Image (cartoon, rainbow, N blue to C red; front, side, top):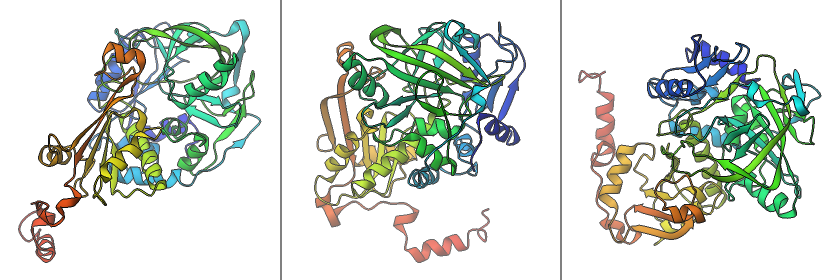
Length: 479
């Protein structure tokens, strides 16, 4: 089940017809990013760019790592988990929940492929890698788009793995989009900068897929994502010590950057096209990561992503991993619901349930907004248990037939917000405030026997007639 490293995963993609090698020379400046987006829109395989303009062939770029596939758009996400490519969203979410519930601790090793080349001090040069300028609207070349940031809490020892975007400043540093409510940035602001201390950080680029998926899982604090990665793999992740700090990092990534974030140092970051489908975060002063050491494999493969209008090349793994994390949190609280889905835009949570008491929807939505994942989900849609939360036709039907325009729209003013949200005003973007809303697309608890009857195959005919029709389906001439 476990992929030993990124290269083993790439071999699996190639066997499945899901890897395309591009041997034509491609410019890292805009052309590569445009190819990525066009290929993603057409549901082409993952892309390995083998010739980047101005760089030797020893420095390829791997793109659209977990993008959409044909005919099942979740097919490549299934491959990352070694699942059948025709698995459906709720099946994938259930499997991720099962694996997250069985975490496996990592093991420490003395050597690993990421140490094949070690570069320190004045020899550090980030520009040796073909870092792309993905889109003309982006503020600069972006080094961190599909990777794992590794940060330790100096008090508890908890190690956070996250994926936060990084824009190149020069050959030894890059800026960091660090929203305070996120775990890694929160550690920097509260545990290091507040004390005037530099924060050690490591950035692993080109890990095996389980490590990347764990990094975007959006689980609650004090859960070590490396343990979740072990659960996803069914095998411990091998860790190795850094050269210049005491962090322990994956032993098999293509590229490993060791650095520090100094207190109160800021540099311009952004704008950048994001998962919302917009370029809405302004250029602003943000923390700086200064690199002290680079280790990398021979012929290192740079992994990149181009987030944007859904479906982008990471939509599906973000959706299933985020959904799984939230399912686990709500179950811990004992809140009843049938199923849950974080939409591909990552802006909305759709959850199906039956009201167990008047106002239960408020309890459920408040619980969601109180989680790590929910704090930055401005829209919650609660539907009945008869609605498939992954079927947007059914969700829209529920929204337009069950939501009372006055009674069932619940707005939360001045809710926490993100600079990535396209709908917030400039003033709200500056203060990181906005609003949140819950659409109650269930029928009220008080209606009980007066609830309108759903008219479809499942609900409008007796079970025996449904079974009769299904048993005779081919006899009627259907396939």
